[in-house]
Amino acid sequence: MVARNARPEPVVCPVNGTTAARVLSEAEAKALLSGAGIRVPRSDRADCAENAGICASGIGFPVVLKGEGIAHKTEAGAVVLNLDCREAVTEAAAGMPAQSFLVEEMITGTVAELLIGVTRDPAHGFVLTLGLGGILTELIRDTASVLVPASRDEIRGALTGLRTGALLTGYRGRPAADMEAVLDTIMALQALVRSHADNLHEIEINPLICRASGAVAADALIRMGESQ
Image (cartoon, rainbow, N blue to C red):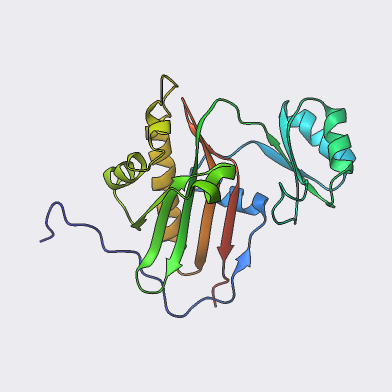
């Protein structure tokens, strides 16, 4: 008989069974997240600047434009936010060092930004890292780590225990984040990890935009191997 408060066994990483990891495109990564029940921005892909403008009109303004196939997009000038018309999208795409583009709805109403990451650890299984996200991630370095699968209460405690955790609960009169939506997202991510444990290497959502109502994975990176 299992004790009522016993912690689930960590999700172990298979020793064999995967080939070298491939980094999924952002569109592929977000499609995988969406299929797991994680909210992502409405989006479309375009193969030229003119089509990027057409895609944006279909999504509705304002939008975010991202150049595909470029690492460190912000530093490379391959991300433009808050574009409010088709002409602005076309012009921005024409000036990017990219051949294809991802056009997304602009997520507004941000209360806080989180980093949610899962990595394979040969000794411990999958490790879930939670912390302050967005452009301040590397500067602030405010994170906490737990083993997958972590309980909802364990995750809540890790988040509120961050130095910047007050941003989620309403700092100096600011609105609080929808903590239940944030927890729903992280629990869904853990379920995704468990279902792909044989070939998953890494998942990172940064940022998860936390709002007063809902949470949205605005950017995502997934490394995954092919099953042998």
